Length: 285
Image 1 (cartoon, rainbow, N blue to C red):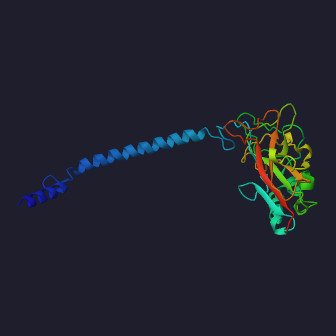
Image 2 (image 1 turned 30 degrees about the vertical axis):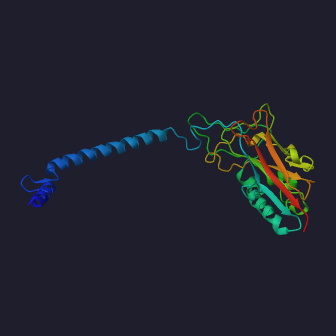
Image 3 (image 1 turned 90 degrees about the vertical axis):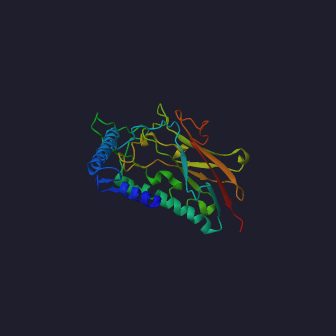
């Protein structure tokens, strides 16, 4: 009998036909609760939408409103066969170095003179190419300066389509990472790249040739205004050709940016403003 009583109590709790209550509440009570939560969640959704709208009004489509103050941009090299930054090949094995030549071909294709002439502007060298906005009137899209592939001379791939790899005098290409608004160098002194062997390999690196001369990044390619504002921007490049590097041995090389307003290396990032890689040219079968 006790079990029948408990069963009846549960049935009555779920639905009480005398008071017409469902789970202990009348229809009007349930209606008020549902109405409260409906209004509550609509209010939360509206508050979230308003917050997002106000935040979006502070953003600029063409440049970040808040930007880390990067004192030193990163550097990268091409070709980069893998994340280990090693260029290893045998001059007698075409397949071992042809991939590097093809990678440079693909990388330099946007720098063809015909492409640059069509898309970009011929700028005045040795001075910043500033394109300021007029108050709230945005000067967009902004023009970009030509960087013609022929500037790289012996490392352009035009006269030597193998970039020196087939004769043991390879070219590597260096570029700085893009930083919006950065003005490298001051007082008219352009930043430039220098490369050298690490301490243990000093006598192995041999003679280097830089293109453009002195390995400079001309000031006319700065400042950079961002991908949306400057859609045709072509990063300036520096090519380094190794003329008589020691063969059949690992040579550890470091290249760095030099400028009178760009510090290289710091406690937080010792590789800031520099890039290290290994070059090995084998001549044995």
